[in-house]
Length: 144
Image (cartoon, rainbow, N blue to C red):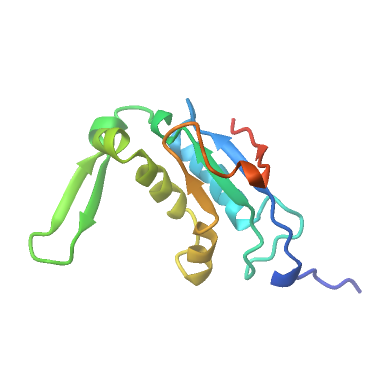
């Protein structure tokens, strides 16, 4: 009788990956990154353990949105006060807050609990090509 493998958090080996978002559609990028952050790309994946890797996303300002999403997609924020709803189009977000736009797409695909918040801390998004994580020697990951 075989036992099911359950990875322990002490035994997790984490790698660093860098993904260039230039010319890639936002949804495809977000699904790939969320999969790596969760650790589902590894054969040792365990649902209740954060066994994912670190991901660096560069060129977030050059990500693609298909169709008419630049004008029609709306991002909402609420301050908690009466009349505190703020609306921004995807065009505004891409021009002024490209990092937040990519982070929101990725975090929306992670679990909405403590484990998901822990996974999202391994995500680093930068609007331009440069990043301060060269000491970790990240390997390049392609998104198709």
